[in-house]
Image (cartoon, rainbow, N blue to C red; front, side, top):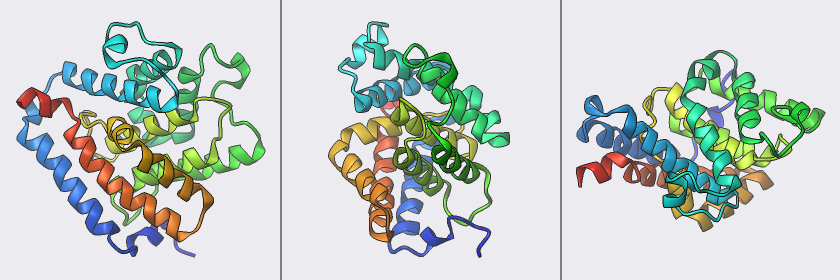
Length: 242
């Protein structure tokens, strides 16, 4: 048995080249738009845009302007809370990814679930799925870092391990992988906005992944290459340079 749990995806047609192209696009935005000159405010704006988009995908009806002004609905507020703590979890996810995932849910679910259920999987099966997903954060793999982020995202959505806010947790975990594996350490691209812009494809491909089998996984990964290209375009670095 291979020690690399993601070895299977490296041979899928169009996947390695698709992720290589997406990574080149992200690197170009970060480099050409002046990564060294970026400020904490730019990161905060990226995280805010991501929180708004993730909240909408979770059911929020708030506009970005409302979220920016602190007038978003409850789901938007949950997503914003997660975004403000996200980057502090990068060193945690590198050491103890299960702890980081639990913290994401505890922050997102505050006020929605009893205290004793925050950060805890729904049942024994969910706990087992969560442990398997956590391994992906730190495993050595030949798969591109973007592919790892995409698989972590989809696995969390398919497993729905927590009693609430699984989508917000999954999209935050995707950001954590991108930061922890060095793709976007300052969290300047906005994958959540890309998923919202591509919502029909996003949701249909997640359903296909959850059903299982290589075709559904393959389709999700090909979708993810497109989404990460759009995530680079959604970066506040783009609008700052326009």
